[in-house]
Image (cartoon, rainbow, N blue to C red):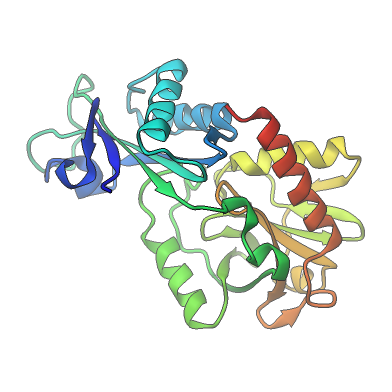
Length: 286
């Protein structure tokens, strides 16, 4: 059965949904996106995603087409229309269709383009990889320097992920000036000396919604958190490592550039954080 998707206020079968060839999201990657995970038909960390969406739009000078209540209604509508139990709701807002191609921004009153769709992922919280852990390799971080804006310009992260797969890894950690920034689509962490270490928020990394929730829960559980830079060598010598993202939640990392962490199995702290996060997220899901 065809999915029902949202395009500029209309609900349509996916094979009937269209966007103009002049849309700036298509021509210029001039837009932002969010992905909200769904477990048991409910939305996880919804308010955090909407807060970040508003920030990203504001940084690019794109008008937010909806308030939070309307966004929530639209998300719930798509979940219901597609009978989604476990998976994600993807939303994208672009600067719109000015009717032609031009580097100059169109007038501010131009309506933005809004696209939303669901992705069904049965058993999303029971990913077998959580029991074995990921292998990551490192690659140079050559992205633009406003990584805190969740834009749709994802070519290099996609290329880096494919390079990682070609090397027999599950993902890549990106490195700049000798320090790990983040994964291709996730935030990166190590555990050393009993402390969780992750890069501090700045323009250099995405301000992860799952990151914020996990660090809050870690502190509430009396775990030590250090927000600072770390090198690849420090990561390879760490007791354990993990990543966080909206779709992977907390995913242990067991190997970095061929160096095995600990005994090569998911670390105790990462496993516990995954349990805590999923338990809390289910409780607070909307």
